[in-house]
Amino acid sequence: MTVQTLRARLTRDDIVRLADQRDPEARALAARKVCARFASDLLTDEERATGAEIVRVLAEDAAELVRRALSVTLQRSQHLPPDVARKLAADIDTIALPVIAGSPVLDDDDLIEIVRAGDPRRQTAVAGRAAVSEIVVGEIIEVGAPEAVAMAAGNDGALFNAHCYARTFERFGDRSDILERFVERSHLPLEVTEKLISKISDAAMTRLVNRHALPPQLAVELAEGARERATVDLVDQAGLSPEPRRFVQQLQLNGRLTPSLMLRALFRGHMTFFEHCIAELAEIDHAKAWLLIHDAGPLGLEAVFKRAGLPERVLPAVRAALSAWHSLEIGDGGAREIAIFRRRLTERIFTQFQGAPERELAYCLDRLDADEAALRSADIRAAG
Image 1 (cartoon, rainbow, N blue to C red):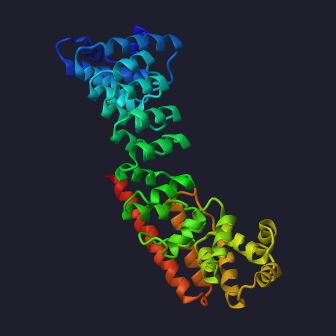
Image 2 (spheres, rainbow, N blue to C red):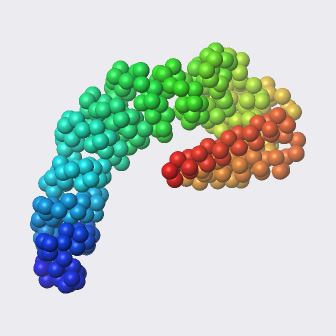
């Protein structure tokens, strides 16, 4: 950004304001405009180098307003010089926090230094970044303030390995408010989910069992009331399980693999689980069960149904569900798209097939209402 280029892109008044030592507010407005230009990907290497020097001068400005304009405008820019990022990150909170929370040019060493400095607000800003490496997460867990650890626990972008999870339980095993933040993650290892059961509140546990897969035996125990604090919907747990075959085997061992549960799962769109149920009951491998279930003709499904020993009366409902499932497409797989898919699937099944069991219909409608209530709550939290 040569002087000539700068003049071409900024007005004369902008340049006057940038040099006006008497008016910090005017300098801050001009600094924001300079920084916005500098953040552009269209500059030449020469212009970028010159612009970096201008940014360094702005970082030395005595006025907080000017440095804040620099921090806010360039907090997520990949072009912010690392030395300037580190300088801003060491400034007062109003200037430092945006850069700590968002700058991609701060590396793990920079972030670890910030965490070790011990300021809880800055540690929390690090923990809430869009991407936090395992090594930085480990440092937060070892020396971070409770609020920083809680932020990391609930941040999908903060990478937890087995050691990080274990140390969190060791250091904050008596802090349910911190451990409950794990429930907000999109994925949890099964062993972590199991540990959380005895550590968190009833409300958090309800969210846990609705969002995350439980180890199969634990899911069955909870569904059978082996522990008083929770009930588990085995149908939706079946859909969450990363090991559907093991989950099905556990249900079978406990006498819970019933035609009603299988039908409800199918009506909810848990096709892989349904296939494994058929494979288990028919004593065939999953691949063969899949071929017979999804046979375009009528014979494959009928044959595997008989082999599985399932009552013939539910076969028409299964055919209707399979037909509806094949006629629909799920979107990107997000929670909202899944909820829309399930509603359409249920509507299509019960519109095309009037003989579906009434109990299964009532169950599906209740679950759809629960899906929509959960989405509304998520929207409210996001808006807040």
